[in-house]
Image 1 (cartoon, rainbow, N blue to C red):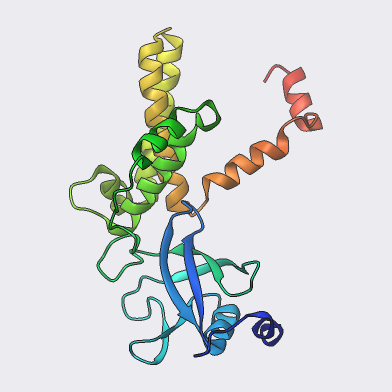
Image 2 (cartoon, one colour):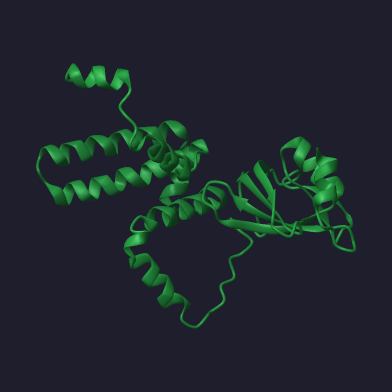
Length: 233
């Protein structure tokens, strides 16, 4: 299979193809590296990323020394078969500088900020903040900046995160029961934030949750759900 794939790829004169690495959960672009036929074969067969180092002129397994490994979720090539897209579960920072992504140097572009603000305000992007927040949480998960609350949660581990989700859910229930919408808005926000932290900890993309909701939309309730509803549960 990998030999057939290698035949489909349009390799450069030096036998390389660029590979864009993307976080499978947050959808952030993490890095750009290069693969040759051998590293592509190793990546496909091992399930972790292997690249060809142009500076060292050798194969390298991403994270082999740092521990910041990349478990491959999917691989694809573009319409011209001259670029790869590798979606991964990133452990720790992707960049050798310690940053979550290698692309952290911003370039000012005229009108870009206004366009971004307009997009956020668009009704078609009314839940865009969830995607932004997912990206920030992914960055915190990778970089673990000192003093950040999200770092504290990740360092304490799953049980602490679960406890916070439970606490925020309870507080949201109490606010709703008390008829206090201001408090409910605040507690619901806290609940959504901690739920996103939980999803990151468990390696479950928000897109998967959205896809599950989409798959349920318009479908008749299951027999079990109908029985629970009829029983008043």
